[in-house]
Image 1 (cartoon, rainbow over the protein chains, first blue to last red):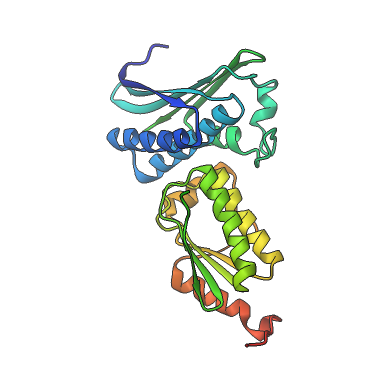
Image 2 (cartoon, rainbow over the protein chains, first blue to last red; image 1 turned 120 degrees about the vertical axis):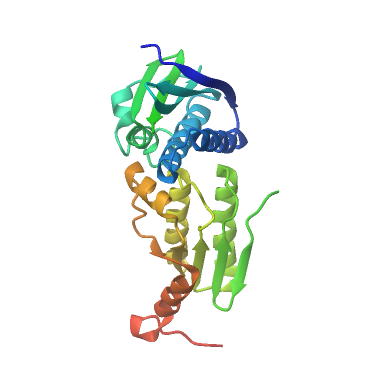
Length: 136
Length: 128
């Protein structure tokens, strides 16, 4: 499904400071796209969860931001990619409370709840790609 | 190293978080606060998060940890000023901040802390 992309940008996710910068740039883009405050907060929070996942579980990676326009509907798509160990069992990882990193285990499942669309593609040993989109 | 200041106000400690915290800063705050509770013999901690535009699971966990640790150290914790959009997002994220007392603003938070010191609550103290 080809989606018209108005604007795109790639950002590194390689340190704790990068996670903060990802939150900030996602906020700016959400504001630009006309998202309301609650919508902004949801996508920024989701981005923070996945960015941390990319950093801690995936050993760092990148995020691609895409501003989307689909029949006048606007959205923000975030694609997080890493070349880490991958997620063995995505269904399990999406369950609340499942954690390998000592956190609360809310990251993936929580981010999915905060997104309009969510997909993950992970191969053990090759890496993980998590795509989340929030529509206005 | 960057740090979040902790102010002492009588028997209470006051923390106002005004920056978008990276994880390490949040952990430093957690450590600093527990150290300060013991050093200053504080009986209450008030954390103002009204300037925070995002509370994700990491920061949520930090708030929960601070509340638990201070409880063990005989101090009450109140988190005040959460923005409505943050509250909505937190609940959807699946984080209900169980065990963390909250108040709408600093004034109401201080009332809560003072109330927790009242002898009627079984918290009789010697003033010295």
